Image 1 (cartoon, rainbow, N blue to C red):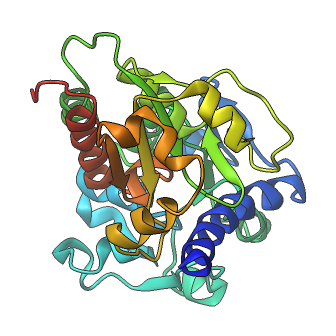
Image 2: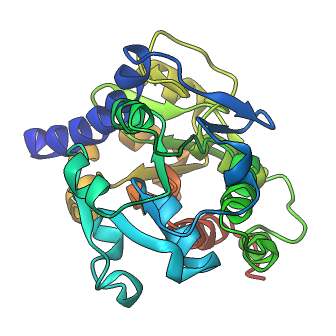
Length: 309
């Protein structure tokens, strides 16, 4: 059972490490857009809303562009989030899973804008830039950066972002109050938790959750995440624990049963009070899509006993 838990945990860890390692070994291509969303090669013509044919190399950007103006999306990354989404049924896939995009497929679509995610898309974005194709390289690690990305994408295709921005506001508590102490576990070996510099950490802060790892810094190779010892978890003794299913998905029972075998697990007040919740990787760790974010927010309201708006 332990090995069955370890493999999914490693999958999450490797997914996050992949981003960190790619960033560390890729030339810096970005310029800041209001300090939250990063862009590359965004020329004045693009800023005037000239993009008509957009290829999105991240699921979140594809989702946002589609919601702003579905006619502008001509290519997307292959993501399980869109498996049964009728909006993307006939849109060509230029990549699948964690594999790099097929640049020949991208070029064949004749895009006037290609949007990538920092860490996953740096190298293909650089190659497309060299071919004279306008590109946008984005990073969403906070709620504010999600809003800024939406505004930037709307500007690039001459769309109005307000309806989508208004929808985002409905995801958050109307009047957040101080919530219980919480620990989000994205990996068991090692114990990896988000601090305030990650999407997950910022989302917890929006709910006024007392994230026990918020202000911690460590030697983890993953930006925005820290490694914790079992002793540190016991010392913090969180009231609520969130477990994260890896990207490929596993059963709730498998996650919980494996952790019950850990010596420290039964000593935590979260387990004693049955306040342990399982969240999907998309929405909490990786924003993924608007629906995934909304689902994560609804789960947080339930886990923290916040009345649904």
